[in-house]
Image 1 (cartoon, rainbow, N blue to C red):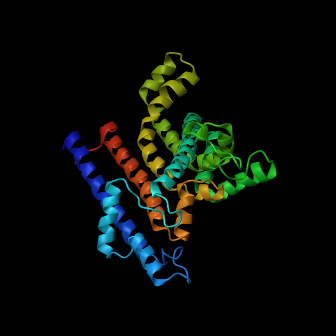
Image 2: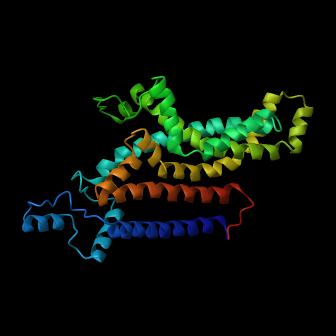
Image 3: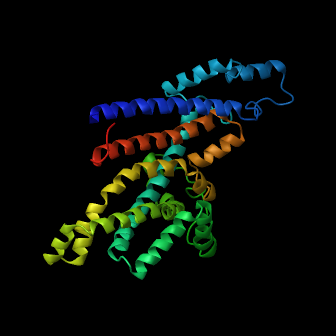
Length: 325
Protein backbone atom coordinates (compact mmCIF):
# COMPACT_ATOMS: atom_id res chain seq x y z
CA UNK A 1 0.00 0.00 0.00
CA UNK A 2 1.35 3.42 -0.96
CA UNK A 3 1.15 6.64 1.01
CA UNK A 4 -1.83 7.89 -1.01
CA UNK A 5 -3.89 4.77 -0.37
CA UNK A 6 -2.83 4.87 3.28
CA UNK A 7 -4.22 8.42 3.63
CA UNK A 8 -7.48 7.51 1.87
CA UNK A 9 -7.96 4.51 4.15
CA UNK A 10 -7.30 6.63 7.26
CA UNK A 11 -9.84 9.22 6.07
CA UNK A 12 -12.44 6.48 5.61
CA UNK A 13 -11.67 5.24 9.13
CA UNK A 14 -11.98 8.81 10.39
CA UNK A 15 -15.48 9.16 8.90
CA UNK A 16 -16.56 5.82 10.37
CA UNK A 17 -15.15 6.80 13.78
CA UNK A 18 -17.10 10.04 13.69
CA UNK A 19 -20.33 8.20 12.84
CA UNK A 20 -19.86 5.76 15.73
CA UNK A 21 -18.97 8.66 18.03
CA UNK A 22 -22.02 10.81 17.27
CA UNK A 23 -24.33 7.78 17.38
CA UNK A 24 -23.04 6.83 20.82
CA UNK A 25 -23.52 10.43 21.95
CA UNK A 26 -27.15 10.40 20.83
CA UNK A 27 -27.93 7.04 22.43
CA UNK A 28 -26.20 7.80 25.71
CA UNK A 29 -27.91 11.15 26.21
CA UNK A 30 -31.34 9.82 25.27
CA UNK A 31 -30.88 6.88 27.66
CA UNK A 32 -29.64 9.09 30.51
CA UNK A 33 -32.01 9.64 33.44
CA UNK A 34 -33.66 13.01 33.97
CA UNK A 35 -36.28 15.05 32.16
CA UNK A 36 -34.83 17.64 29.77
CA UNK A 37 -38.09 19.59 29.91
CA UNK A 38 -37.94 20.00 33.69
CA UNK A 39 -36.72 23.61 33.33
CA UNK A 40 -39.71 24.50 31.18
CA UNK A 41 -42.50 22.31 32.46
CA UNK A 42 -43.66 23.52 35.86
CA UNK A 43 -46.51 22.32 38.03
CA UNK A 44 -48.65 25.30 37.09
CA UNK A 45 -48.18 24.86 33.34
CA UNK A 46 -51.20 23.76 31.35
CA UNK A 47 -51.21 20.54 29.33
CA UNK A 48 -51.39 22.53 26.08
CA UNK A 49 -48.40 24.69 27.00
CA UNK A 50 -46.40 21.63 28.06
CA UNK A 51 -47.17 19.85 24.78
CA UNK A 52 -46.19 22.97 22.83
CA UNK A 53 -42.88 23.18 24.70
CA UNK A 54 -42.06 19.54 24.06
CA UNK A 55 -43.02 19.97 20.39
CA UNK A 56 -40.83 23.07 20.08
CA UNK A 57 -37.84 21.13 21.47
CA UNK A 58 -38.46 18.31 19.00
CA UNK A 59 -38.90 15.76 21.78
CA UNK A 60 -42.34 14.65 20.56
CA UNK A 61 -40.81 12.94 17.54
CA UNK A 62 -39.99 9.21 17.44
CA UNK A 63 -36.47 8.38 18.51
CA UNK A 64 -35.30 7.44 15.01
CA UNK A 65 -36.60 10.78 13.66
CA UNK A 66 -34.75 12.64 16.44
CA UNK A 67 -31.60 10.75 15.44
CA UNK A 68 -32.01 11.66 11.75
CA UNK A 69 -32.63 15.30 12.68
CA UNK A 70 -29.55 15.27 14.92
CA UNK A 71 -27.28 13.89 12.18
CA UNK A 72 -28.74 16.40 9.72
CA UNK A 73 -28.05 19.27 12.09
CA UNK A 74 -24.43 18.19 12.55
CA UNK A 75 -23.89 17.90 8.78
CA UNK A 76 -25.16 21.46 8.34
CA UNK A 77 -23.11 22.81 11.25
CA UNK A 78 -26.13 23.23 13.54
CA UNK A 79 -26.00 22.12 17.17
CA UNK A 80 -29.58 22.98 18.02
CA UNK A 81 -30.94 25.36 20.66
CA UNK A 82 -30.02 25.25 24.31
CA UNK A 83 -32.84 24.18 26.65
CA UNK A 84 -31.27 26.26 29.41
CA UNK A 85 -30.26 29.49 27.65
CA UNK A 86 -32.77 29.31 24.77
CA UNK A 87 -29.95 30.38 22.43
CA UNK A 88 -28.13 28.60 19.57
CA UNK A 89 -25.67 26.11 21.03
CA UNK A 90 -22.89 27.18 18.70
CA UNK A 91 -23.12 30.81 19.90
CA UNK A 92 -22.73 29.56 23.47
CA UNK A 93 -19.89 27.14 22.82
CA UNK A 94 -17.68 29.05 20.40
CA UNK A 95 -16.34 31.39 23.12
CA UNK A 96 -15.97 28.53 25.62
CA UNK A 97 -14.12 26.50 22.99
CA UNK A 98 -11.53 29.25 22.43
CA UNK A 99 -11.16 29.72 26.19
CA UNK A 100 -10.24 26.05 26.52
CA UNK A 101 -8.00 25.94 23.45
CA UNK A 102 -5.98 28.99 24.53
CA UNK A 103 -5.61 27.77 28.13
CA UNK A 104 -4.63 24.19 27.30
CA UNK A 105 -2.59 25.24 24.24
CA UNK A 106 -0.53 27.59 26.42
CA UNK A 107 -0.12 24.88 29.07
CA UNK A 108 1.07 22.37 26.47
CA UNK A 109 3.48 24.87 24.91
CA UNK A 110 5.03 25.56 28.31
CA UNK A 111 5.08 21.82 29.10
CA UNK A 112 6.90 20.99 25.86
CA UNK A 113 9.44 23.81 26.12
CA UNK A 114 10.34 22.83 29.70
CA UNK A 115 10.01 19.09 29.05
CA UNK A 116 12.27 19.06 26.00
CA UNK A 117 14.89 21.26 27.70
CA UNK A 118 15.03 19.28 30.95
CA UNK A 119 14.74 15.97 29.08
CA UNK A 120 17.80 16.85 27.01
CA UNK A 121 19.73 17.77 30.18
CA UNK A 122 18.65 14.55 31.93
CA UNK A 123 19.98 12.51 29.02
CA UNK A 124 23.19 14.52 28.82
CA UNK A 125 23.91 14.13 32.57
CA UNK A 126 23.02 10.44 32.69
CA UNK A 127 23.90 8.67 35.94
CA UNK A 128 24.09 11.90 37.95
CA UNK A 129 22.00 12.93 40.94
CA UNK A 130 20.45 15.57 38.65
CA UNK A 131 19.08 12.83 36.40
CA UNK A 132 17.75 10.75 39.30
CA UNK A 133 16.11 13.75 40.91
CA UNK A 134 14.63 14.88 37.60
CA UNK A 135 13.08 11.47 36.91
CA UNK A 136 11.54 11.36 40.40
CA UNK A 137 10.05 14.84 39.97
CA UNK A 138 8.71 13.97 36.51
CA UNK A 139 7.07 10.75 37.72
CA UNK A 140 5.56 12.53 40.74
CA UNK A 141 4.13 15.28 38.50
CA UNK A 142 2.68 12.73 36.06
CA UNK A 143 1.19 10.58 38.82
CA UNK A 144 -0.40 13.44 40.77
CA UNK A 145 -4.06 14.09 39.90
CA UNK A 146 -4.63 17.40 38.17
CA UNK A 147 -7.06 18.60 40.83
CA UNK A 148 -4.49 17.92 43.58
CA UNK A 149 -1.77 19.83 41.71
CA UNK A 150 -4.20 22.68 41.09
CA UNK A 151 -5.23 22.90 44.75
CA UNK A 152 -1.58 22.93 45.89
CA UNK A 153 -0.79 25.74 43.44
CA UNK A 154 -3.85 27.71 44.56
CA UNK A 155 -2.95 27.25 48.23
CA UNK A 156 0.59 28.55 47.73
CA UNK A 157 0.34 31.31 45.12
CA UNK A 158 -3.22 32.56 45.63
CA UNK A 159 -4.41 31.90 49.21
CA UNK A 160 -0.93 31.88 50.78
CA UNK A 161 1.12 34.52 48.98
CA UNK A 162 -1.76 36.38 47.37
CA UNK A 163 0.14 36.81 44.12
CA UNK A 164 -2.57 35.59 41.73
CA UNK A 165 -6.39 35.41 41.65
CA UNK A 166 -8.01 32.18 42.79
CA UNK A 167 -10.21 31.74 39.73
CA UNK A 168 -12.04 33.21 36.78
CA UNK A 169 -10.73 34.52 33.50
CA UNK A 170 -10.71 38.26 34.10
CA UNK A 171 -11.61 40.87 36.70
CA UNK A 172 -15.29 41.15 37.60
CA UNK A 173 -17.09 43.66 35.41
CA UNK A 174 -14.59 43.57 32.54
CA UNK A 175 -16.33 43.21 29.17
CA UNK A 176 -13.86 42.93 26.24
CA UNK A 177 -15.37 44.02 22.94
CA UNK A 178 -13.18 42.05 20.53
CA UNK A 179 -11.28 38.77 20.19
CA UNK A 180 -7.91 40.52 20.57
CA UNK A 181 -9.03 42.49 23.63
CA UNK A 182 -10.39 39.29 25.17
CA UNK A 183 -7.23 37.19 24.89
CA UNK A 184 -4.29 39.61 24.68
CA UNK A 185 -5.11 41.77 27.69
CA UNK A 186 -2.81 41.54 30.72
CA UNK A 187 -5.83 40.88 32.94
CA UNK A 188 -6.54 37.70 30.97
CA UNK A 189 -2.89 36.55 31.08
CA UNK A 190 -2.74 37.32 34.82
CA UNK A 191 -5.75 35.07 35.50
CA UNK A 192 -4.43 32.32 33.20
CA UNK A 193 -1.00 31.89 34.86
CA UNK A 194 -2.02 29.48 37.64
CA UNK A 195 -4.27 27.14 35.59
CA UNK A 196 -1.66 27.15 32.81
CA UNK A 197 1.02 26.21 35.34
CA UNK A 198 -1.11 23.37 36.73
CA UNK A 199 -1.65 21.97 33.23
CA UNK A 200 2.01 22.37 32.28
CA UNK A 201 3.20 20.47 35.37
CA UNK A 202 0.85 17.58 34.60
CA UNK A 203 1.75 17.29 30.90
CA UNK A 204 5.48 18.07 31.17
CA UNK A 205 6.55 14.57 32.23
CA UNK A 206 5.73 12.91 28.89
CA UNK A 207 8.03 15.04 26.67
CA UNK A 208 10.68 15.13 29.40
CA UNK A 209 10.99 11.36 29.81
CA UNK A 210 10.65 10.65 26.09
CA UNK A 211 13.29 13.27 25.28
CA UNK A 212 15.65 11.76 27.85
CA UNK A 213 15.26 8.25 26.45
CA UNK A 214 15.78 9.44 22.87
CA UNK A 215 18.81 11.45 23.92
CA UNK A 216 20.40 8.33 25.42
CA UNK A 217 20.19 6.61 22.02
CA UNK A 218 21.41 9.64 20.07
CA UNK A 219 24.37 10.18 22.38
CA UNK A 220 25.62 6.69 21.43
CA UNK A 221 25.69 7.59 17.74
CA UNK A 222 29.01 7.94 15.95
CA UNK A 223 28.41 11.51 14.82
CA UNK A 224 28.36 12.69 18.46
CA UNK A 225 31.88 11.29 18.97
CA UNK A 226 32.95 12.97 15.74
CA UNK A 227 31.65 16.32 16.98
CA UNK A 228 33.52 15.87 20.25
CA UNK A 229 36.70 15.04 18.32
CA UNK A 230 36.23 18.23 16.29
CA UNK A 231 36.48 20.17 19.54
CA UNK A 232 32.94 21.58 19.67
CA UNK A 233 31.74 22.81 23.04
CA UNK A 234 29.47 20.58 25.14
CA UNK A 235 26.70 23.17 24.94
CA UNK A 236 26.82 23.18 21.14
CA UNK A 237 26.87 19.39 20.90
CA UNK A 238 24.01 19.11 23.40
CA UNK A 239 21.54 21.60 21.92
CA UNK A 240 22.57 21.82 18.26
CA UNK A 241 23.28 18.20 17.45
CA UNK A 242 22.07 15.74 20.12
CA UNK A 243 18.83 17.49 21.17
CA UNK A 244 17.97 18.46 17.61
CA UNK A 245 18.10 14.84 16.45
CA UNK A 246 16.10 13.67 19.48
CA UNK A 247 13.09 15.91 18.94
CA UNK A 248 11.57 14.03 15.99
CA UNK A 249 9.73 11.33 18.02
CA UNK A 250 8.14 14.11 20.08
CA UNK A 251 6.57 15.66 17.00
CA UNK A 252 4.32 12.67 16.47
CA UNK A 253 3.02 12.53 20.04
CA UNK A 254 2.22 16.26 20.20
CA UNK A 255 -1.00 15.64 18.29
CA UNK A 256 -2.10 12.85 20.64
CA UNK A 257 -1.26 14.80 23.80
CA UNK A 258 -2.96 17.93 22.42
CA UNK A 259 -6.20 16.10 21.82
CA UNK A 260 -6.06 14.48 25.25
CA UNK A 261 -5.37 17.83 26.93
CA UNK A 262 -8.32 19.57 25.24
CA UNK A 263 -10.60 16.68 26.08
CA UNK A 264 -9.30 16.48 29.64
CA UNK A 265 -9.56 20.18 30.47
CA UNK A 266 -12.57 19.51 32.70
CA UNK A 267 -10.67 19.20 35.99
CA UNK A 268 -8.42 22.24 35.59
CA UNK A 269 -11.34 24.42 34.48
CA UNK A 270 -13.41 23.28 37.44
CA UNK A 271 -10.64 23.87 40.00
CA UNK A 272 -9.81 27.34 38.66
CA UNK A 273 -13.38 28.33 37.77
CA UNK A 274 -12.29 28.77 34.14
CA UNK A 275 -15.26 29.35 31.78
CA UNK A 276 -14.29 26.73 29.21
CA UNK A 277 -15.76 23.70 27.52
CA UNK A 278 -15.10 21.29 30.39
CA UNK A 279 -16.95 23.36 32.97
CA UNK A 280 -19.80 24.06 30.57
CA UNK A 281 -20.12 20.32 29.94
CA UNK A 282 -20.58 19.60 33.67
CA UNK A 283 -23.14 22.36 34.14
CA UNK A 284 -25.14 21.40 31.05
CA UNK A 285 -25.35 17.78 32.22
CA UNK A 286 -26.56 18.84 35.66
CA UNK A 287 -29.34 20.92 34.00
CA UNK A 288 -30.26 18.14 31.52
CA UNK A 289 -29.44 20.56 28.72
CA UNK A 290 -28.95 17.89 26.04
CA UNK A 291 -28.03 20.14 23.08
CA UNK A 292 -25.26 21.98 24.95
CA UNK A 293 -23.96 18.82 26.64
CA UNK A 294 -23.90 16.95 23.33
CA UNK A 295 -22.25 19.96 21.67
CA UNK A 296 -19.45 20.07 24.24
CA UNK A 297 -18.91 16.31 23.99
CA UNK A 298 -18.93 16.53 20.21
CA UNK A 299 -16.39 19.38 20.02
CA UNK A 300 -14.04 17.92 22.63
CA UNK A 301 -14.30 14.41 21.19
CA UNK A 302 -13.77 15.75 17.67
CA UNK A 303 -10.52 17.41 18.73
CA UNK A 304 -9.28 14.10 20.16
CA UNK A 305 -10.27 12.13 17.04
CA UNK A 306 -8.81 14.65 14.59
CA UNK A 307 -5.54 15.06 16.50
CA UNK A 308 -5.14 11.27 16.66
CA UNK A 309 -5.81 11.16 12.91
CA UNK A 310 -3.01 13.67 12.25
CA UNK A 311 -0.71 11.79 14.63
CA UNK A 312 -1.39 8.60 12.68
CA UNK A 313 -0.53 10.35 9.40
CA UNK A 314 2.59 11.87 10.94
CA UNK A 315 3.79 8.45 12.07
CA UNK A 316 3.27 7.08 8.58
CA UNK A 317 5.06 9.99 6.93
CA UNK A 318 7.97 10.64 9.31
CA UNK A 319 8.89 7.13 10.47
CA UNK A 320 10.16 4.97 7.58
CA UNK A 321 9.76 1.84 9.73
CA UNK A 322 5.96 2.16 9.64
CA UNK A 323 4.34 -0.17 7.11
CA UNK A 324 1.33 1.33 5.35
CA UNK A 325 -0.51 -1.97 5.29
